[in-house]
Length: 412
Image (cartoon, rainbow, N blue to C red; front, side, top):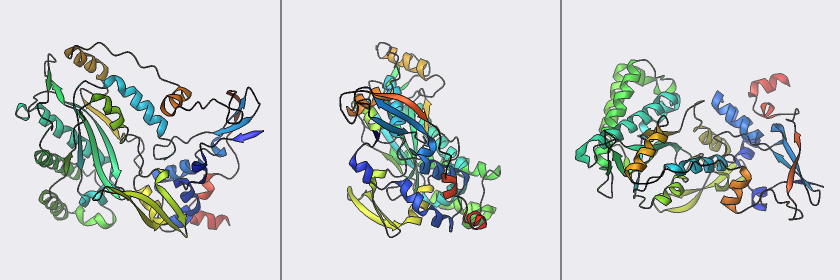
């Protein structure tokens, strides 16, 4: 007996992003070309947990039942492949939590920049990280802001809003304190807010526009299509004038007062994709209905758009190859993070943290969901054991589904 593993009945019947791509990517490509990054996303999502990627067969050591487990694509844009990476990442962050209040700041770029970012993602998003990090460091080093030391923080890039439109912003999680320049004392934040929102917005705007100007002078920006007018000095100056005339939004959220909640809070923002499969309600008559949170009413609502528009919005959020969307700064920077945190814990009079041993998938699932995935789904008594590998499928692949329309016509 072969049992093809499914998590639940709900999962069997749900509409997924991969289903929408499989049925409508052909229509989408008649209007929009796929960039290399977008092609890779579509290719991986269509193949994820299918026979094309191969897998393995497990057999119960009690009743002899077998189940097929197909491999995941592990693409960071895939809605089905983020849970375990997120939990492993959060597990690794446990040793880094400090016994202090934490702050959540959100830095948002004006929508006037959206078309420029779309054609210059790597340059523009790197500028976003750089200007936000320098803004926070500037405020942290200024004694007049209540600290006067070196901050540490994690910055997480999100590129979407609830309706999948482009909305570029950084979520920053910041311990409420700084380490002195000589590393001899910890300076705790004296208020229940870190820095003034309006002041942060002014400095953030100035730093971003300065780096944007430098990228323009160094010819690192491209201005095709609708943004061609910005290529001229006059057009670019007008853009800068418009950017300076707008108030840039920096949101300082309610502080997290209990350090044990920091990981749970982080989990809401790390390893997220533009839309998760559970938010998709239906796919019917070339229309997709999905749920979104109305920020004004704080209620979940539904919206319906054409499948081509849904795919367009989903693929808007493709990141450049190798681009890092979760970054650590200050005393949390990757290079010396372990040493820095050990020193800061000493300043707090705390013992060294124990080295975290990476758990297996089975151990993680048992801890997180209380589910023993090694238990036989048929007899509920035996353990599923690896029987043999399934090679990658050599038949019709995702490449045939997403070949350019002209290529398919020529082949026919």
